[in-house]
Image (cartoon, rainbow, N blue to C red; front, side):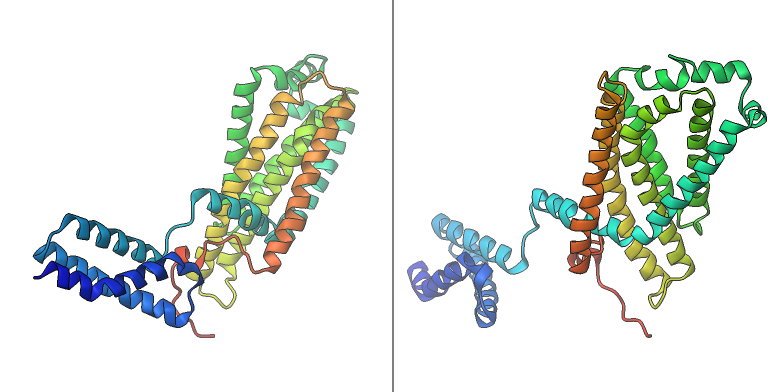
Length: 335
C-alpha cells in the first residue's frame, strides 16, 4: 500500500472527524450521524494501517483520533465529584421528601407513645420497680450517674464512632428489614420509644428531667429524625411488597429498593453529624441554651434541606433511584 496515497485520500475525512469530535456536545442530528460514520471509517483505516503500513506517526494520529471519537460517540462516565454532587443536591433529599407521608406519622406516633409511657413511668413507683432495683435507678439518675456520665465516659472521637455505628445499624435495620411486611420496623420503633420513655421517666421522677432534656435534645433531634426517616422508608418498602400497585412486584421492589440504598448512604452522613454533636457538643461546657440551640439549628437545616431542596427535586421527577443508564431497561408490562 502506498502510504502517501492512503493519507492523501483520507486526510479530509480525518480532519472532519477531528472537528466533529471537538464540538461533539453541540452537534445536531445529521452531524451526529456523520460523526458515527466517520468514526467507523477511521477505525477501519487504523486497522488497515496497522496491518499494511505500520508508520508510527500515522498510527499515533489515527489511534488518538479514534479514541477521541469513541468517547464522543459512546459517552463517558460522569466524574465522581459530579455524581456525589447530584446525590446530595437531588437524589437523597428527593428520596427523603418522597417518604415524608410515612416518616412524619411514624415520628408523631412514636413520640406520642414515648410521652405517654414516660409519664406513666415517672408517676408510678411500681412501674419503676419493675424496670430496675431502687439502688440501680439511683445509680443511673443521681448527679454524675449513668445517664449523665454516658456522654463523657469515653474519648470524644471514639464515642462519636461508637454512636454513629450504633445509630447507623438501627437505621439500616429499619430500611432493609422493612421488606419483611413492615414488622421489624414496627418492633424497632417500639424499642426506640420504650428506651426513650424509660430515660425520661426515671430522670423526671428523680427531679432531673430538665438536665436529661438538656443532654438529649442537642443531638437527639437530628438523630431521631434520621431514625424516623429510615423507619418510614422501611414501612414504604414493606408496603410495596404487599401492594405494588400497577407495577409488577419485582419491578416495584427493585425501584424502591434502590431508593432505599440511596437513603441508607445519605442517612449515614446525617447520623455522622448527629454523632459528632453527641460526642463534642452534648458533654461540652457550653450553656444548656447554646447546646440546645446547636441541635435545633442542625434539625432546622435538615428539614429545610428536605422540604425545600428535596421537594423541588421531587417535583422535577427525581425519585432517588439510579439514572436510566445505570438502572437498566424495564420489560413492558400490561395494565
